[in-house]
Image 1 (tube, rainbow, N blue to C red):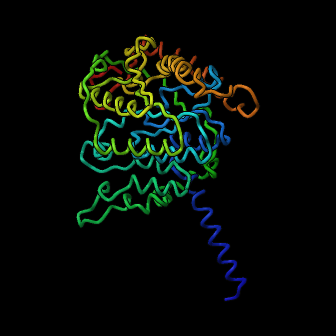
Image 2 (cartoon, one colour):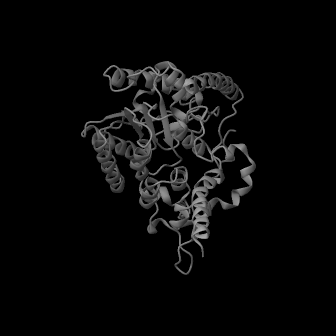
Length: 388
């Protein structure tokens, strides 16, 4: 074999190695999370003031375009459905590759849950879809490999009758998720997929997800409980690891609970434990359930699904109140918002995002009023007697 032939083979192999991740980006299944992460990677270097890490309540609750329009602060969520706490540290590391935020904000609802409960479904079957929402929305990198190693372990896998690990759960299928999504190749004709070739495509609403659903729930008083219940041991270990990571990078953090219907005194007790844990280590903790009255939040109209996620009207109330909190505790002290990002061409996409947010809010308010008038309410899955 000649040197020229060897060179061609090497060039071919390098081209294939370069193409694999980019083709994978394109055929990953479309989702809000995919748009959110690709949108984050599309943001210009060192232009994000704060990053919010957590599970699905985050993009429904915190209207990041409004915060920009009202305060000149750029805030972006790196959230996924049922995000396992173990991922938080790695998402901090992922953020710091391209951004240098003044503040990390962590939504702590999932930190109350046992790790097993976040992996097993109601039928005691293993499922890794929520894990994949993190790992399969990250760009290929060493940090992604570390994230997979932390989240994908043998005890989390499903095995066949012969004791062999089912293919979907093998780490190799996470490292190279093209194996998972290869059947999506037909979606390559879609611009919405092709545009993610470099996994950098702007998210119009900067990670926010609007909803005009209405799912009433009754007021509860569990959030007034003062007792303390220990959080799951494995989550406490992850929290200690996360705090060590923040200290290593000299980063400030705010730990929050977004509005939701607390199920029991025991549930609130674990929130109280997390509060004590982080405040004893010098960080602020904000349980928004303690301030619903100040927000003007209405459990009968401001949730989209019975007390788990807010609709766009609820998000607006939460965000306006949260702006005041940020101003008092971070902006006035010089910890956040050192530059008003509303000036300069670099932030034109944020200006457009704010305008789009205002349009979505107006449309959402009208639709929500209509739903309330018609009693067109969210229906719990499997409950045929619930109001529609």
